[in-house]
Length: 197
Ligand code: ADP
Ligand code: MG
Image (cartoon, rainbow, N blue to C red; front, side, top):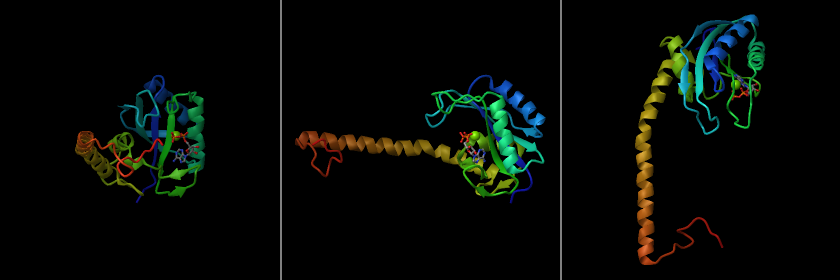
């Protein structure tokens, strides 16, 4: 699994993402990293309640003679070149460059984890990535990128069912509260997990 190909996840949620990405490509070239393929830019709603602005994401294939650690430092330098901003709105940034995979290399250090953790759960990574790799392309811990994307979409479609189950449960909780009201039962120690003394 894993040929020699190197992929970078690209993201921006501040300023003009298209322009930032074009500048990033030039800055990478100037530092010895050539972008050989680019997925279309994908716009996403902010996730996890962390970032407030819309995200723009892409995945790029790059070619370089730099080692993984050198490449990570190059990516960080380019983030710096383009004035990566961290504000109180933590999570919004001008440019985020993550090393997704470096060939088949598996690394587990805080400075560099490969493949990048959680890529298998992120449609904004798998979606663009699937545009620039074929069906057979697979990554350690994720499997085939195309298959992982299909699975993720299937899970996403099941969410309404889960929501309905939660709604049903809430409704039945309300029913039991009503029952308590009619019986005058305020709920004893077993019924109420929170006690205010
Ligand atoms: P994030 O991208 O998770 O929002 P940062 O871009 O600030 O956060 O990265 C945080 C740290 O993650 C960096 O200090 C970097 O050394 C580390 N890191 C570990 N593995 C990777 C990887 N594969 N690509 C990019 N950064 C990584
Ligand atoms: Mg990053």
